[in-house]
Length: 353
Image (cartoon, rainbow, N blue to C red):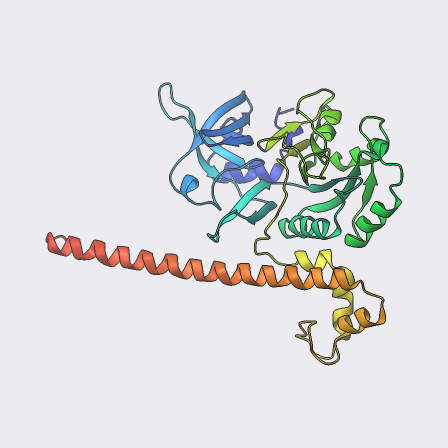
C-alpha cells in the first residue's frame, strides 16, 4: 500500500495526476506551508518543495495544507518544484486580513470540519454559525465539538446555545483528558477522511490532535482569565493518524471574514431556508417585505431574533464580498489591458510588429 493512502490518497487523485503525465512518484500532499516553501509528503518520504510563477503570485492558486501537487526536480542540489496543484475537491476559504479583497485558503481536500469550542465563555453561537457556514461553503461536513467537559460543572446552557446555532450539525461533548466522548468523535476519520479543526486559541484543538496522535506533538494552552485564547499552534499542519485518516490543526481564529460561495448560508440556516417558500415573494430578502414568513416567525416567537439578525448580517457580508471581488477583478482586467497597450506601443516604437 502506498504510504500516501493514510493521508487520503484516492483513485481520482492518481487518475488526475496521470492525465497530466505525472506518475505516483511525482505526486505529493502538502502537510505544511511556510514562507520559504512547502513540506510535502511523497512516496519516498517528506521533502521540501517550492512553488514558482503563477502558483506563487496568485492567492487562489498558491499551494496550501491539504493540496495534492505534482512535483519536478529543480536541478542539481535544488529543492523540488511544485508544477501543478491538482483540482481541489473541497477548500476552506476566508477573506484574507486587510483591506484588499483577496482570499486565504486555509486547507483543502477536507472532508470534515470540527468547530471546536471550550465549554464556558468560548461557546459563542454567532461564531459557531460563521464557522459552520465557512465549512459548508468549502464543501466539508461540519461537526460542533465542545471540549474540556471535565472542567465544566454545568455544560447544559452551553450545549443549548451550540445546538441553537447549528441545529442540524452533529454535536459532541468531549474531554480528551478523561476520554469522555472521544471514541464516538473519532469515527469522523472513518474511510481515511481528512479532518480540519477550527476554533479560537485555547479551545482545545491541539489537545484533540495530541490525543489522536498518541503523544504531545502540539503544544497546548488554556483560555486566559478574560476568556481569550493563548496562541499555541502557530501554523497549519497536517498529520496522519496511526489508524488512518489525517487531521489538520490550525492557529486560533478569533475573527473569520467569509469569502464568496454558494449554498453555505442556506445549509447553516436551514430552519430559515425552510420558511422561505412560504414568503409572498420568491425573491424575498426577509427584511421589510410584506408577507415574509421569516419575519412572521420572528414576531411569533418561533425563530430566535438573534439568529435571524445573524443570518441577515452574514448574507450582507457575503453579498459585499461578491461585489468587492467583482470590482477587484474588473480593475485587474483594466490594468492588464493598459499594460498590454503600453507594451504594444513600445514594440511599435522599436519597429517590432
